[in-house]
Length: 208
Image 1 (spheres, helix red, strand yellow):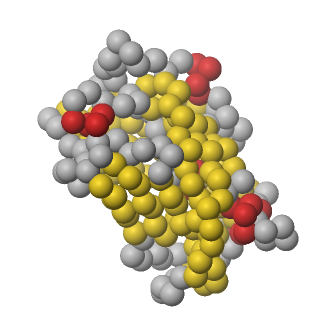
Image 2 (tube, helix red, strand yellow):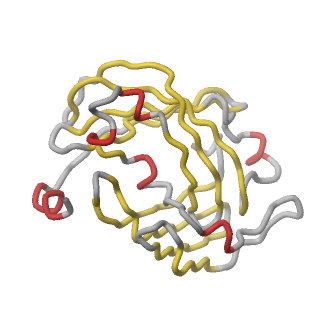
């Protein structure tokens, strides 16, 4: 991963499951880039409006980057819950419904739009999953914040037209999650795969 970026971090998202969709209520990010470390905390209302946002230390933008403004904090979703989808929203139509989405994503440091387009289907043989998979192409549109970096980080950024996400259905609940992501960068193809998933039946039942 060092070939792709000097950045690393950990993120967590909290929320509820209402009306067949996932509603984020909070997002935390601990982001490291080189010697710089930033902590982000978002408090999100049910309608996707950001109630409070803290970034410590504050983001430092280049002259060609647009600051995140109040207009960017409406009807958003965090980057973790953005790619979770209730099966009830898909079934009854076609699996292509997984890719029929446009997302406004905020992680506190960046605000960007993502549109998914269907690329194909497949199957998965992995513990915790059942049925077919759906492959979506990700169309990435930067909006504001720390989008793109100078020097090596920028040249290694993925080609926004060559990012593919494969979704699989969790066998123990009505939920589709990303099982793999592939992206083309200047250094070649990068891929990330989900190796394990666990579900707490008591908590998932209580959230419905």
